[in-house]
Image (cartoon, rainbow, N blue to C red):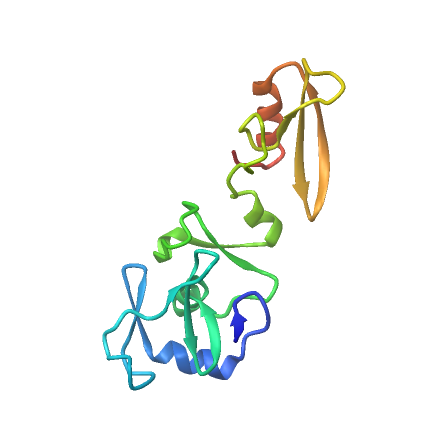
Length: 165
């Protein structure tokens, strides 16, 4: 099954699907039955293994947040992603969705589980354990923001460079 969302979207299938769905409070409901087992008014789709709500239609799988954005604002450029402002993958209220580049969307990620300090963009320096290094990832490359005496100063440098912690 092909997942449609971050690659080229089959315009005809997507357009047909959008006419069959109604948006209410961050959810999509069928306004016409797509098959024998699905009733009009039923909640559309299910949650996939990545934690996103998806809808399968005519052999294609669509990410619900992208469909909702397109219902309200039109087609999404291929290199752009839909970001959940509150980081809740299932909160598809239109007010919680915004478009971002891949690197812009990465700013909104949680702290990685292997981050010993628990602060995004800051690590203890390997060679000077009393110092803290700030860094940010831009367009797939890590940029060093400098070495600092305190965690707070390193965190401020990260925020000033455009990071969100």
